[in-house]
Length: 173
Image (cartoon, rainbow, N blue to C red; front, side, top):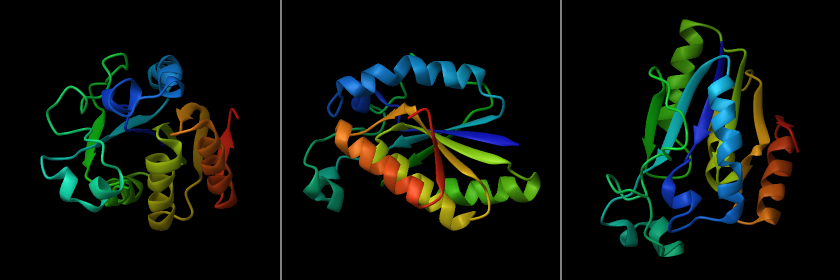
């Protein structure tokens, strides 16, 4: 089985509170990847609450975003949502729940590969790839550079290099 993890393709990260032109530019590629992916699709969704400003993230990034049940929190409606897709809400960069789910899936049916795409390469994509690597060190991990965007083009490239150093295969650079 192959698994595609679509990280935080939410309105606030595309063209909302923390959006960038690079994020907007990958939406069609991400949609095509989801439509044509020959495996299971999992989405993560950055999820914050009214107390965001009091959290460590909020103190370090004082831009309110991805507040649960707001438009900015929603996964972009430009992306297909398969009926059997799984969504993990996560209050921080990496999702322990995602990694635990992947372990259970691998126990049920061996996973051949896990591919990561989405936003932001340098924060949540890299975090989820590394958390997954810690839980499933023998499963090949892939990141599709053409379906990721970082906070800046430079930090995107730095994150791709860091993932590559930690044995995440980078494709479509």
